[in-house]
Length: 474
Image (cartoon, rainbow, N blue to C red):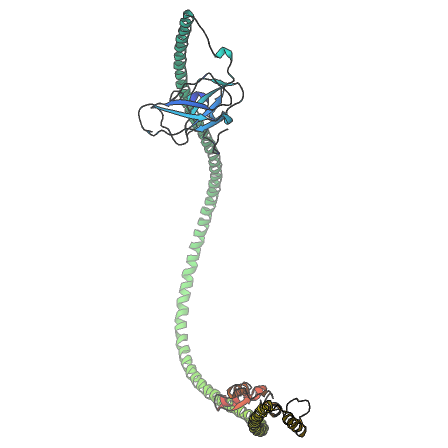
């Protein structure tokens, strides 16, 4: 098939709808030898405008639509696309993509819309035979062949004319078919509209019948209403007579009522004055009762607060004594620790000085020992060794210069491990802890009164709340 991967544009339109005269194929052989490339020559007339997706295909004779191609090649676009003159073009089909059988094929030019614009005469792919090599004819046979060719050309022209007329008739018939289809569609729409209208008409008839029935019912109800109106009118006249008599009686009662109202007004005025006096007395009584109850409640509250304050004062006094005792113990312990620290510091200083002296003496003895090499000096050194005993477990000539420093360090380690202790939770704070950290730790256990700045332990929260309550009553 074609060397490219894109599929060419095709169409399902039948063969009769093409325009075969827009592209003319030239120098088409009767047969092509298999295994060789085939060059197709064609002429683009002024009736066609080449486009980028035009293609030339090889079709087997008898094809109906442009989809039945055997192979194809994209048609090259000429340089002068919009010219009014014919343009010669050629395209080469590779032997690999050509048919291998001896059926009849033809070249066809297909435009970008998939419509055929030109077709060649049929040809075959077969080997060359001896009959095709040389044909010798006489002059008479040549004239007869030319005459036959003229007749064939004339018949071909007549057939083309007939084909053009048939194509025109086909176009007219297609237009008539379209109009007929449009009329059928309109007729179907009219039918559907008619059916809808008939359905609406039936529904309207049913509604009309229902409205007539309702009208009859309404007329019967209207007749009943008229009779009721007549009865009501008669009753109204009777009631009017009764109303007149009642109005006369009402006038009499109104005159009596006016006299009664005057007497009632006098009584109401007297009653109103007495009511005012009674209300003022009630208000005075209620104010006195409220004053007495408030004084009693204040007395109870003050008594309760006094008792609570006495208990709180006793607890605070006891706690204060305990805290003062603890603070005094802590201060004594702190002073003792400071005194021990000073003693250890002085001992360390003395041991450092002694250690320095021992180092100097040791250095001088070593220098001396290196200078003496005779036997007498070595005996003196041996006597010196015998006179100065070395400490246990040590290999120095004199005492270990670092032994005093180690002893001082041990004493300091055992004596100054902890200097400060929290008076509440008994947590121990070494000497390297800063004073502000120690004070912050102690302060975290306390609650301070914002009024009198008195401090309370967090464990005794109730005492703190009672203290604050007493401030609120002041």
